[in-house]
Image 1 (cartoon, rainbow, N blue to C red):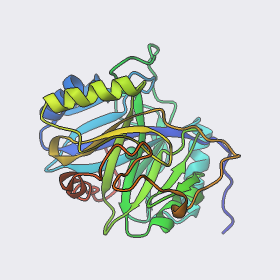
Image 2: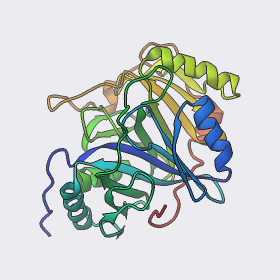
Image 3: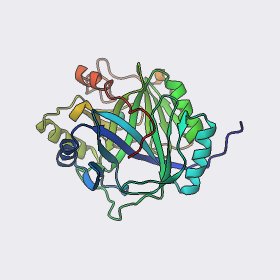
Length: 306
Ligand SMILES: [Fe+2]
């Protein structure tokens, strides 16, 4: 079958994620008081949290029997882009796909859900509500800048997102980093035994906010599990934590921007000072606790419905 064409920029960015948790109220308290998101809406036991950016919400917490990644949400340019992406995802062989239509949740919009070949629920959404008061604020995450996913088939997983959604490979290290806009990566695939969540990264306005956030996390009982440091691919500053229910979450800043002149690196291009795992040579490898948590969170079965 001839692949329906996409336009550059049909997927404009990573909109956010939907998480399933046992105790929505506890998570909502954590993600507001400590992590510094703000409540954008509440409905039917779910809480929708925004950053300081324009997106209606970036993190949604839904009551479920246990922790799970329910859905990864991508932003599309407009409804024509949604329809083009729907045709393209269908032709690329997504195992399940819903019809484009209105999104029945706070923020609204027009979009569709599908499963990628490893059973991850993904939605593409356009024309959703935006906040007029978006601006960068100290100590407030602006957006979710990337989600890293474990997979036993790293290159196949990345290839599907490239073919179906128009992502481009930015770099390869142990991970494969893919982008859908000027941000170095919005998704990365990490080698793993099954399709699980590795971590979710929230972008801060600078290093000071990352470090003050690390202090809040330590005081709340979540010490830095990896970092602070500066990554090779993406060149971003990072601090990782094991959050409530063992979701691994990252504060990051200074995420690199790339353009069409960017050269894709290979794993042998990256080297760090001996015994360290970042460009500064300041941070030792991740804690065992974090490495265990980075394999624990699975995807909910089936297409996501709010
Ligand atoms: Fe990250």
